[in-house]
Length: 137
Image (cartoon, rainbow, N blue to C red; front, side):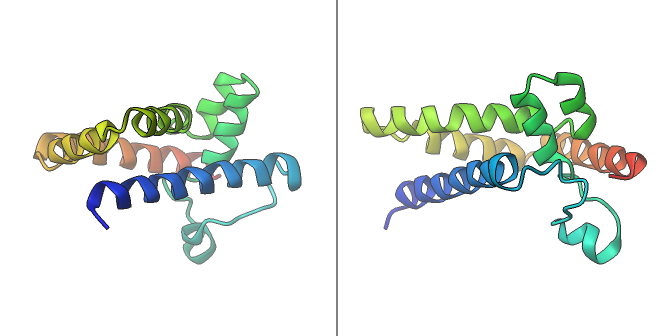
């Protein structure tokens, strides 16, 4: 199996898992997740990880409660964009028989190898982690 095919399969599985998790939380569990802790970092060390609150953030975005979404986790906004744009990009590549998403991924990863991009990305994650710890999610 070539790399682009494997890449598209992994992206499809991750998107399906993400949408499945949101569906499960919204319509099956009817949970605000205040009583549901699934984060291994939180369960083991009692400290929220940088992605804690992401599900609540995305669900708030879907309810158009922007300030609440940003309160839960500011990474929710870029994640929302990914959840909305990646399926469209996958379908476009499938219809047009192109690998533009894979090519973009390679370009992105090439940029992330540069120290200043990696530092900026790491800083955003670190600040989000501090934000989550200060809120005591």
